[in-house]
Amino acid sequence: MKQPIYILLAIVCCHHAKAKVLDCDNPVYCQGQLLDVVQRSNVYNDSKKFVDMVQKNSQNITLDHFQELLAHTNNSPTHDEILNFLNENFESATELESWTPGDYVENPDFLNTINDTKVKEFAQALVKIWPTLGRKVKDSVFEEQDRHSFIPVPNGFIIPGGRFAEIYYWDTYWIIKGLIISGMTETVRGILENFISLIQRFGFIPNGSRIYYLNRSQPPLFSAMVGLYIKATNNITWLEKHIDTIEQELNWWLENRSVTVERSGKSYKLVQYNVKIGTPRPESYSEDIETCKTFDNDQKEACYRNLKSAAESGWDFSSRWFFNPDGSIGTNITFINTTRLVPVDLNAFFCRSIRELSNFYRIIGNTNKSNEWGNIEKQLMQAIQDVLYNKEDKIWYDWDIDLSQHRKEFFGSNLAPLWAEAFDPQNKDEYGSNAVDYLEKNGIDAFLGGTPTSLIHSGQQWDFPNAWPPLQEIVVLGLKYTGNDRAIQASKMYAERTLTAYMTGYDNAQEMFEKYDAVNVGEFGGGGEYIVQFGFGWTNGIALSLIELLY
Image (cartoon, rainbow, N blue to C red; front, side, top):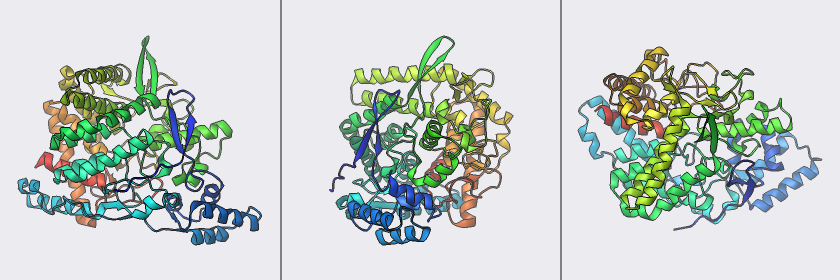
């Protein structure tokens, strides 16, 4: 098996974190004059196109050719001259090749448990999508890594689909759920070991498997992914081998994303999305420059940091991160301030992952470590309750650090503590009933196409009317886990609506979408920085999970 070589990294010190942050200093794909000139020229409609291209020659030759371009154009190449340079030095050849997982079967056993003919046919169609999304890294990427932005990994994997032709961190949780239902646990093991290799190389899991993602992560669900795999296989030998690396990833979050919040005379330690690198995202370079153009110097850097921090959340972008001068929810992305918030869902995800790690140590017989992480989980759960829970509305909200108050706006993420079971189990019945009331009060039960991300019309993709698959699961399973009768009935209703939307969309277009429209059943969602994407990894996994839940 080929082993990936180490990618050149710059060590950038954080101004308020104990640990150091890795950032890519690649002079083609991550920073520098070549990237700046190409991306500012807007020769391609999507900034991601350039940073995903492959160099035809070694990096040094590419850089020499770029200097020659600058020399004979007096440092001001035209649009056509830049395009010619790109055509001569880059190509859109993919670093990946199609891959059919070795444990893939067209008719896995779970299909036999589905009595509804139409649902069974839909489930079978979903299973057949897996090999179309299967990829593995070409040998050339390992052998000539300086020509690529792709971070090579040893095993085959499932991509989300569309423009997302690489591994993405939090997408993979729901992809893995679907693969396990499809009986593909060996594929899951390989995917988990790809993440293990990333943690061992970089100390954390980046947003995706491109070097330009090395300045940020995504919602910390790796430990939860491992939990799904161990539950399905009971592979304790594998767990013992990799548990130190699983712990390393959670420690990265504690060291790099912790924030202390003061409330009612007490100090609480929570986590937030907080990227320290104040430059445009290489894959959205011209878009970020446009967003932050009104600012100078420090404010511009802060704008870039907050864009990256929102991208780390997976919610890129949403009014959730935007602020008006008075602190209220805004709709202008220029006034993004992600790091001003302590997000509900992040802390719920992290609490769930810590609980999983504590349980892993219990399984392998390390009581001391199990107790150590169990205590961290209890402290975080108490912080979620004391800081993020609103006693008046009886729901959890993001915390505004500057104003020391809740951001009392509906977002699907407000129910994440239910999904993560990050609450006192003695009160779970009450939480379930309250959550149903909260959804009804906000009119969420009126949307037949799924739960909308928010009720705010901002034009951003993580706002109304888009119904994102992960949020559908958060609502459906969050309600179910409370055990409350009303919540269980509501959970079933929301699950049926979501599945109907997915089946309707598939019947109409023979495609699965990245996101859906909460108002128009089965139609794809819009907004954001790119057109609708098909595939689609996490949607397929959640659809299979809903089928398993309902049938």
